[in-house]
Image (cartoon, rainbow, N blue to C red; front, side, top):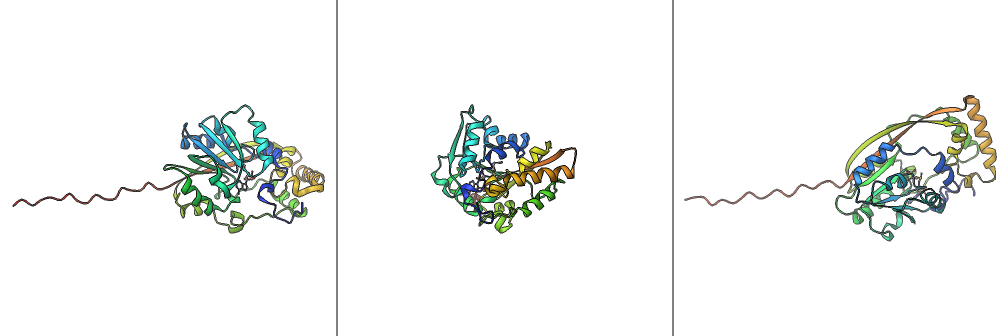
Length: 277
Ligand SMILES: C[S@@+](CC[C@H](N)C(=O)[O-])C[C@H]1O[C@@H](n2cnc3c(N)ncnc32)[C@H](O)[C@@H]1O
């Protein structure tokens, strides 16, 4: 694949699925619990842009059913493999442009995926499809946390060297720079509740190298026949930076719950009283 071309929606993460499932930091357990509480045990939840089931799989034991939807066949296959013994997830090839084709659902969660979509169009469709009380939930990095791990500048430089540091999708966050909460507050789902959950993880060099291959920038498909050269260079850079080969990662999952505002009942007209004469 030409690394300068924006891949089609079903190939944004070409070949990344096994790396994503293994090396991308999971969402904090408390974040999954927060989502589960918001949806409730009887819920059918659409996980849109489910990837390899990062949310769908842990969420499934708290709700009635999860519709796990993604345009990337590799992500779906990886998710199905990991959830072979989870009966209440339906894996469906689909995307944000065809929500009406999906079975009915009561709530939606988008984990690190909303930024790829035409967000206003998705919210307008969801306003038609979600029943009263339906929650639109986002889970992902916080706009207020711009801290970087010490290895990130080095990996960014390496991506630049390999010509794989840019990727945008039209109408997405990458194209407009508009934050998710700003999009939500001007949508029908403008009643927002935001909570952040932090976890600390320990990563070795191989895990950080694997993490690079989970990013849409530097997927195996984009790197093509330079994949081995990239991973070797990444290993070298990481060990030069930190010869111990062990890194502590801080991950923040922001859970954003968006609901339609509860409309106040119209004021009752004052009771008419007949003046006594
Ligand atoms: C970074 S992964 C997120 C996976 C998982 N939800 C998580 O929380 O880690 C983003 C996923 O969104 C999917 N995606 C990209 N564009 C999409 C669209 N327009 N509609 C639905 N999913 C999309 C990609 O295929 C990818 O699997």
